[in-house]
Length: 266
Image 1 (cartoon, helix red, strand yellow):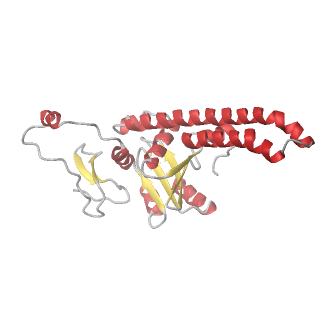
Image 2 (spheres, one colour):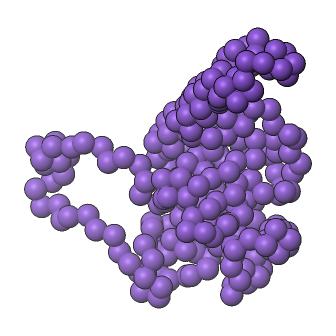
Image 3 (cartoon, one colour):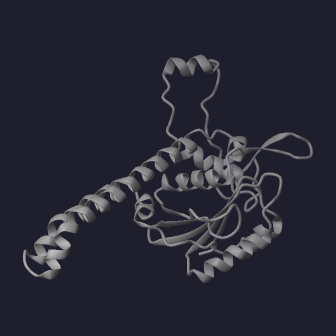
């Protein structure tokens, strides 16, 4: 699957699961090895005599491996939550390392209800970084932490080939920057979604917990004449509009969050 993966041990397998599942697997395996297996073998026979003394040791080893894996899973989950909840702008997205960037993207999709499989043995570029599953659909995702360089058509073609090879339902490419016009043209009409830095930031903000504020604190921060904040819809496709900046003039304007797929402005 893109970058090669090695066979994981029991602890690594448990660490890849949600931590409650690791604890449950540890307790269930302990009971099977410590009580169920000796009861099934009985008290007589050469096999029972050989395995009975070992069942307690094996049960304890199984439980320890599962609990340690569950602990690792819980720590990873906490770190992913902290990582996502502290991202506030594009600069903070670019400041993370490539591995943490993949983790925060995965956490954002988890909060949208996707099951996320991470590639823990990959490198900083190329191939499939995450596999998303939701409502029976399997989506391949690649992360590009690029700001100074646009994602080109060659990468989009590669991911489309992986989609066909793995019989996936769709492909998503997430970049902190933008995409070339050739990349957007190739993705058009295909099950390929090109997510820009602005779109990713909007998605992250949508799944971050709302900061508790009081009416008095809100009034203190805003002038009395300030109008309520609202999200403008794109006049072309209906997606949310985000503030963008003209690279030539430096002027700010409202542009579609699905740019370059949609170039609507307001």
